[in-house]
Length: 195
Image 1 (cartoon, rainbow, N blue to C red):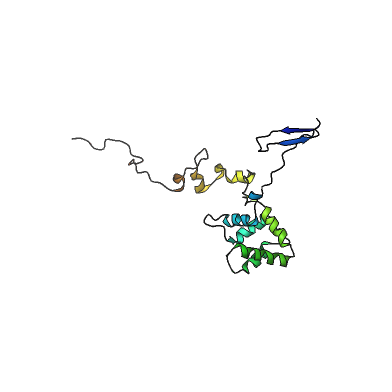
Image 2 (tube, rainbow, N blue to C red):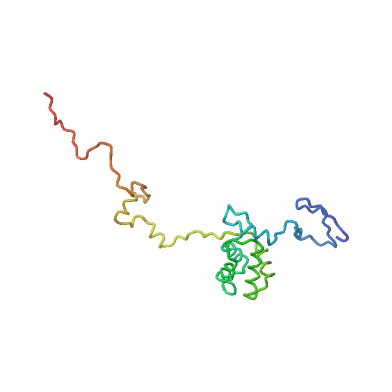
């Protein structure tokens, strides 16, 4: 295929894609999204709100700052630690700081740790939104199996489960009385003779 060939692609929003000299098109290059690109201020607001539904995102706490820096790989435990961030954050004499004070905090930290502040701000800008690192599923080990096998329980704990191993609930925890009126050992004998 020589010359130019136009391809109309409507699913991706690209109207005219030109293929020259028979080259096959690769995946479409990402469209620059300058109006929707994330800025340092945007990430500051998102991390300031993280975990606090009442926050307006104008001030950030030390713990949220540390989460942000860990996600951005600034806090590595060697060059910069949470102790370092705590020391320089406390110098601001406030539990929450605004963006201007936060930039001052970053400058102080970078200067004392001999790191470029622009590099730190770039990492903080490009690290993405806060991520949740939840605990994975619990592995069923022999220890867990042994501890959860109710057939091996002794004493009062044994009474909390029925024969199938299912818990009895309140009946297994408390000594409930039978208020039905039945008396054990009663035999219906004619103790009263009619005259």
